[in-house]
Length: 218
Image 1 (cartoon, one colour):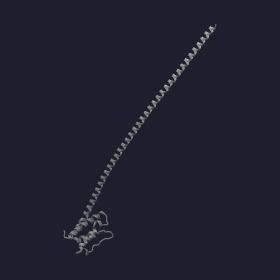
Image 2 (cartoon, rainbow, N blue to C red):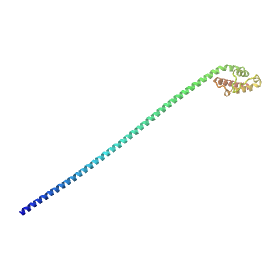
Image 3 (cartoon, rainbow, N blue to C red):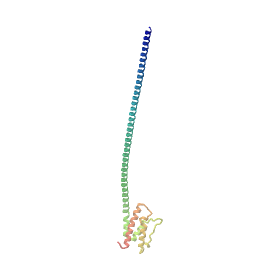
Image 4 (cartoon, one colour):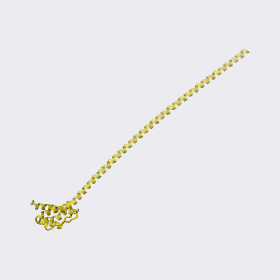
């Protein structure tokens, strides 16, 4: 009986040891499984982190490319606007130059017309007075002086020179012609109208001829 009890105890001890061993193996397997799971989770987390990093890099690259594209478009838009403004300024300058050329041409035409009208008016004035002046000149120096002082007295500032009979006789005639040249000189006249300007110039020319006649040059 003692042997039987010993064998039973041995069997129980062996069974207990076996159970302990199995439990130990099971715990070791569980620890190994847990370790493997932690490793897997770590690998998974690492992979997720790598993917997120790659995604972030991809987004950053896309953002960089977007910024470069936006900058390129902005540069192109600025260049296009600059070109448009340059073209507009060029067109406006050409239009302004053309307008100035037309205005200058119109001004030249207008000046030429005014000068032509003035010359025509001056010629009409000459034609109106030349016959009487020429007739008086033909009658002699004294008659010419009497005529111009009577019909067209000089208009010097503040005075109205008079012609006396003594002034046109003998040796006084030469001095009277000289004085008349001063009185009728176009630059000394007070009247500024065109008629008198032309008339005084015509009288001055004939007075010069009077000087030549008295000097024996004609």
